[in-house]
Image (cartoon, rainbow, N blue to C red; front, top):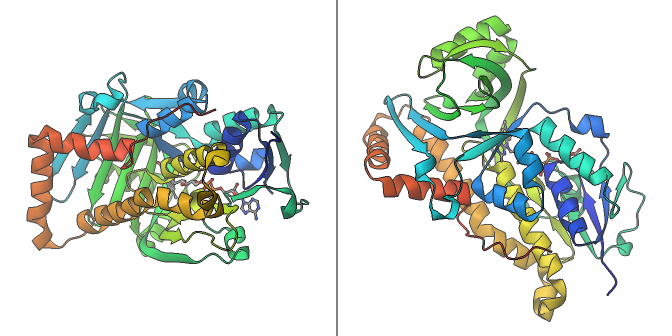
Length: 384
Ligand SMILES: Cc1cc2nc3c(=O)[nH]c(=O)nc-3n(C[C@H](O)[C@H](O)[C@H](O)COP(=O)(O)OP(=O)(O)OC[C@H]3O[C@@H](n4cnc5c(N)ncnc54)[C@H](O)[C@@H]3O)c2cc1C
């Protein structure tokens, strides 16, 4: 059988992983990315990696190398700062699905993840990388656009896209924090927005700090010393911030999703070009990786699909992914609107949620299992 030719547009984490997943099955992949390899490394971001993502990386034969570049954490402290309530999720809250694991999650720096993926892509004989798209669309069996939330391909294909901007923005940077319990991540809900501390080593953390646009702009104007003083005031467990070790990036935040492409079933949006949601809970890239897994499986299985499923591949893919995506948009929306405010009549409900999570392990375990294993349970059948 002649192997398919597939064009992947965009070589961020989604496009790079997708190219590698397709090459694993010996498809001829043309990967289009305007940025050079060194420019692709430049973002100063850290990604939280969930158990579901670990299993997908394992299927793609990438987990051993990604794990070496990641930092595992064994507990997650979720704090309602206004009500002074907290709940701790630990390794013994991992379900049967992950009971061979001691780490409940991992954090990987964008730079290290991309370096690893770029090296694998450059060594792969089935992937041809181009900086300019000089190809003819007619030469490809599928065109998969992974060109991020501002996707120009989405506009070119005239795909309907629904988008709402959050009033909140966030800053993200790396800092040395002293005094935190080892291997612990934090999600702290404050009235102005969440604050996430993701451990990158025993005392270096990726800080993701959400607040109103005006407050974010003020923070961006502060000296590092002033910002550290402000951060010190916000940190739990007597943690002391010592030094900022990276540049400070700011991000605007949106909730968005695209409808499937019904005009041409072989042109499909994958990853953040198709959806985005609030980064609280660290689910963004994890959901993109589930997109990669789902679309790669569907393409691998293409010959076995019924005629109608082939004809409406983009719709079938959209339907397969929609429960996960819609639940994440709603879940992250719920977290920010419910826990980041000063609405007093919500306080008893917030208190109750923390009380139940602390006192009834089943509730805590269930919520965490949905966050880490996704709402859709994958069976991880043989990938290639
Ligand atoms: C502050 C913050 C914190 C986050 N934390 C987490 C976290 O902890 N865990 C997590 O899972 N997710 C997290 N996310 C979400 C995560 O960053 C995104 O989900 C992820 O970057 C999406 O990857 P992508 O490859 O789809 O898009 P991008 O990373 O945007 O990549 C798109 C690529 O397409 C290229 N491109 C653009 N236009 C074209 C074109 N015309 N032709 C060819 N190529 C093109 C771009 O150069 C780029 O390389 C966070 C997001 C933010 C903002």
